Image (cartoon, rainbow, N blue to C red):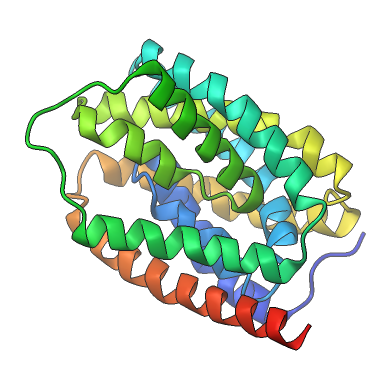
Length: 253
């Protein structure tokens, strides 16, 4: 059974899996860096396919921990939209080059960070419409399928509601656990669950589980502000590099 042997991949995989663990522990959005990070060494879809089995195992742990903290209305509208988003992304992914996917992932990351840095958040909590929730759910499913980057659309929908911290975290965990299962069939259809990719996932899994529990421990004991500041800077730098490499590959092509 073969595995990915590129040393650069494993140099990037350690921080990527650590960030996934923190993200699945409750620091929503931090794990979004993982796929762009691995995409510096591998095609983005292959990077996403290696991470998906890891995410599914981490989801099971996190959903159990946060099983009592979630919002039913938000889950319903977001999941309805996500079904369409995942399906559209599966069709889209089969017809575009790695350069296009790199550019898209980079745009998602840069847009998210710029919004976080410069966007204005309303002072009063507000619940968006069901139609709005389905739209952001679809966009979240779309970007999650392509690059495990569904957090920004999810957060655009959820953050203005100013829900209790654990309710927000629990809703996030259950939503993405179900979205990740939706992605299994499309990844099989795209031929991404190769023996090499699955063996690499298995090799990284013990470390991923350990960091997941570490993230759960941290979310209850550590302020999130410092983690988010670091995550936003890293996301911006990595996403900008992916945009540059995608544009250069398209230019050469």
